[in-house]
Image 1 (spheres, one colour):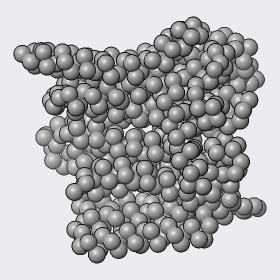
Image 2 (cartoon, rainbow, N blue to C red):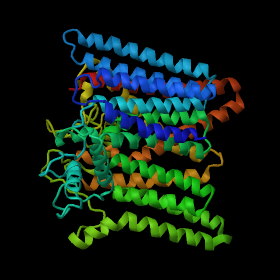
Image 3 (spheres, rainbow, N blue to C red):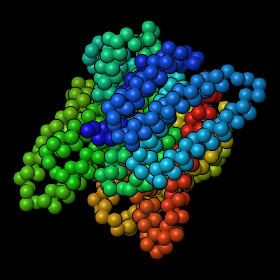
Image 4 (tube, rainbow, N blue to C red):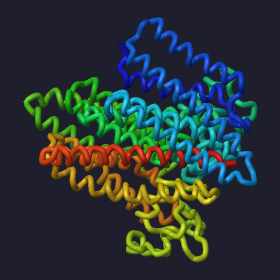
Length: 567
């Protein structure tokens, strides 16, 4: 029988493909009546097959719950499409419906946890599935040209990420141009190759839009798949670390509903695939450490090799992986020959896969290793006039506008790295929260919630280091990943003095690691409190479970409100 986590991965692939096939991004209402009936028939048929096969009631109940959530999401999409056309008193109507949505979602969470007598595997599965549906909702309701980074257009004279895909799709080879002179063409090609294969596959099925300029809408299926599979692997890391269901529930509530994590599901650049592969590296490293065999180390090598062939900065997880591999080899040094063979196998698979493009560009074009396309000093986003102290300690005017101002206006530009990081985490590079009263209230609250969350993340790393829970290797591994990543991020922000350099997308692997640490530290403290007082332990657990649920609810209503005010 297929494991539940593997079923979730299948769902994470099949659902986005159905979205690409059935939802029309250009239509005002996204889903035709015929497609609605077909999707409804598929859901009914699937549940009927489980009944005919006499599957266990728990499995059928989970399928019914997921089907009900899918149906609710489809109805919500339709409702938001209708609300986009409201005028006059539409603002108050949106606030009322936003409150109603929050109450419905809260009731669902409460009934779910009550019916399961607490947070169980079913609850964790359903919160992952809810995070899937939020991403589907976001991608369906958000035009592909919004909230992107460096994409340009799918057009002959364009470069950028979509231009890169166009070059490969049209000519079937790497662009024959110096990557240091062409925007974004310096990146390794794996993401773009996958995009081309996907487009050709959809083309064979006759599902591509007639206009090539509209193909970006179809391409959003891929990051949707990547970010949904990513959540499954984050949960798998939690299982590998032997975290409780409650702790993994917290991780998914934060990792699954962080606003930028949702926005990344529609990103057409190489970030979603790079982050997925890096997170998979973490999981397979943990797995290999517990059971060091060649099959496991090959998976590690393929993941890091493909991650670096997607985006070279994925190599930031390599030092932590190397430290774990050496520590495990020292622990089993009597079998040093076997470990040596495994390390050679890792090197032969990972380094050619991850480095061939950098070597190719260096030999052919003289492009330096680790090259990043420079932004002109006279660009409107230049912030080189601020000194290093100001980049960390100057909060004057930093919170006057809670979204990132991507350009210098009125003699001021966002330059404070910690404040800007939270802004990017909440709104990306957009300012949609100022568009409507509902999104203003929700967006402002989410910003301050994220500020507290990131402060707690920093504290959790310190606290977790002093909790004796038998996870020494895992602590060292995650701490090494975060330390190297943050060092590289800060160095990047200081070297490339532009507002866009502070984007949270450069350290998303560390952010996900931080959420795992928050959960591990929180329940480590809760166990200590329970040891001294059972009553206080219950209160503590109640708070630990309530706060993430409220965060997830807030994020879902925020995204619903955002969908209404978008064009």
